[in-house]
Length: 222
Picture (cartoon, rainbow, N blue to C red):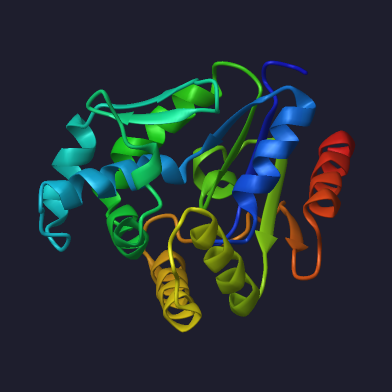
């Protein structure tokens, strides 16, 4: 695959971006980056430091100076913050509830996006997030937007949490999901929305294999 190839996959929480992106990357021999991990890393560190999440300048300063690394490991990529492996903490309920608020801060996004673009220049990549096709890789040849109903996405998120040993409440998860959708879609800076030239896939009722095949077919036709 050409080193210049980039596949941008966007969509709301629990729309299937990560699972689909990982499998597409594996089959096409690309690297994979879930850009949400960068925002989750900033959020986790902000919570650890007990920063006021309404204080945009402090969050921006943190994002500008935090040391975040994505390193390969025998069980997949691992996220390091200040040299400490925080991979297993990034999807905690506390981070889930706060990450949309942190990622909505313009200064935080301004600090993180250049790092994401730098990674994309290092070879063929599948990158997933909420503003990849519209902002981060706006000139990507292949753009996909995955969507699903809030109820289906809440059920998926609960299953993810159960598999990681948590005991989620479906009603609470749906409430948090709808709140995050609202923040992501209404933020002034790079709101969640499909790129004009993106393939939109409604994943309700579709299995992973069906969605992956659709993305790969689209990439081949692009």
